[in-house]
Length: 190
Image (tube, rainbow, N blue to C red; front, side):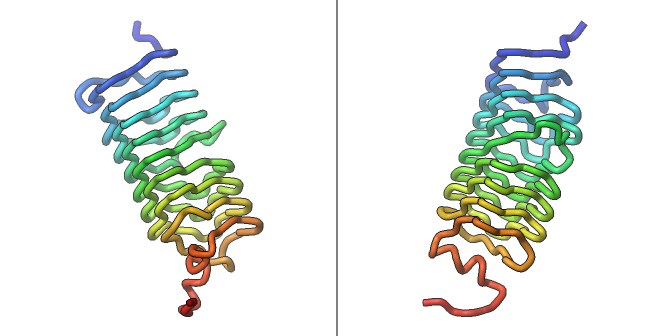
């Protein structure tokens, strides 16, 4: 019988487009340089796992549990995180490509995004309060009815956040990034 629980395993340079990854619970596992692109990860459970240098482009995350999961140097283009199992949902991103990903209507408080590209990411209706965006490119990211209270965006850039459509109380912005809050007014600041 195929095991439904894997713990303390290291998966290295595996192409899960060619070999089947067993639908199971993975705890304290490390995935290094693996290809999950277009793979159906529906209803998998990943707890305290690290993904390093992996490609998860367009993977199906419907009802996937991501609990204390770190993504480092990963390509996560087009992922629909909003379809994940939201029970204990906890992720961190470092040096990742998250373009066209969706966090629509998710509660992802205290999430860390570090040195990542988040072009056209959907944060509409999400609660990302107390999150840290360290040196992130947020070009075209969508923020509407988003809770950004106490977020730190001081080192991030290319964002456009309308203070009238979002909750930004006590959020931190740099002087250089302030234009991202004023863009709709079509004014010039020198």
